[in-house]
Image (cartoon, rainbow, N blue to C red; front, side):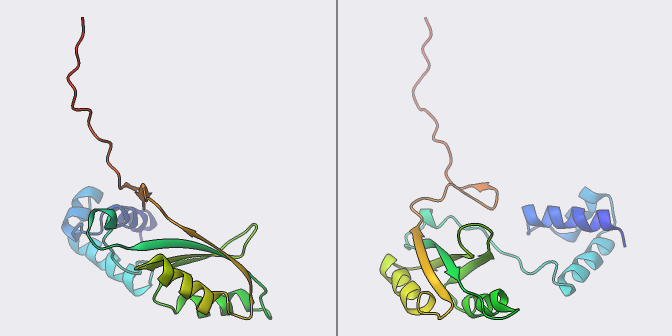
Length: 164
């Protein structure tokens, strides 16, 4: 197995999941069938876990609220953090969940239709867990960049330049 080819395929797909095996093959200098075989292996090994489209919801009519929630927890037993994480990531409102080092234990990214909806979710489902000591919720106001993509384009100055 060519480890460097695997890494190159992963980097290319991470930047653009719409690339075909043929396009990747041209970029990597390898046959498309070899690239397709490696992609299938990466999917079967769950190295590639899914293909997603990055959407700038700020440009759509539908309102979507995003919040980041810090959780301080008291883990129980040897598998405590994993057990707590399994409880949390089951909720469909949870977009992302990280175990962190530092002042808090988990960082949870939530999405909902309203601030109230997210607030209720935090109070009813996260803060009420026995292991949770405290929560701190931060609502995002504007997303400027996500997954390496600038979501806000710099506006062009429409004025004419006049020089003496």
